[in-house]
Image (cartoon, rainbow, N blue to C red; front, side):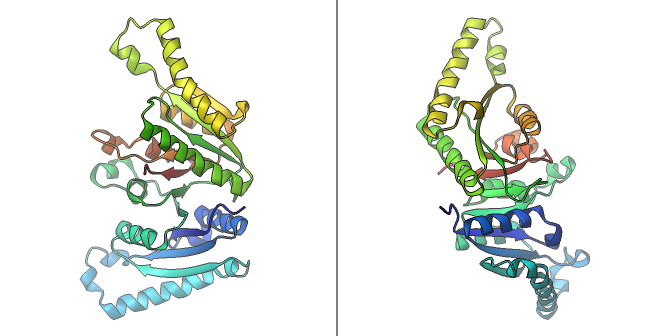
Length: 295
């Protein structure tokens, strides 16, 4: 059964060597989904900051040249029988135009390569990938280095630290998205919760081992219930203690995980500088992410 009907790939001049393009094409072939490729055409570097220096005719000519290149770059995909459409889109505001496209096309997945930027630059600007995580109306699959076109091991990273109904439903949404990807790719579905008890120790250094065991049991019970509800085998359930970023990074690298499916929640305060857990996971070269937002 097909899990996807429509896929949107956002790309640029890196298309011929793009891991995201390989992933998008493989998912489209496996699911029978229509694949739309939007190649962003931005002003040449020498006039990027002075858009008025390029008149309408020059922009059209530049975009047409890009469009011809795109047709050639996707020729092999067309020959493979995919339901493929392409467009070269002139833009000086990539985030705005990607979001407009996502709302108009309503893809099941928006797929894009990961582009890492220096930390110092993040102090002054918010990289496009990170903005997409926070603002995309559809699930975003940011593709890093990939060992295979289709993922073989998918993990849903959840948080059962609260019994709030909204959070519980958000966990289920994350698992459903991971399950759809795993089913479409005939991949293993794993479930992971990295729980951090250090705040309890910092709040009260006299916390006893018994109390810690009780807290751990309180977190494990809803995790087990979620795993049971979605039929995740015992050997694919991972309830691990530690700081989420470190735990997930170690787990991904030790177990050959291809995709981590996580929630994208707007960071606040210091999180805007450092990045929340989802964003920081993108720094792991071997790891691609698929993010979903709460309803």
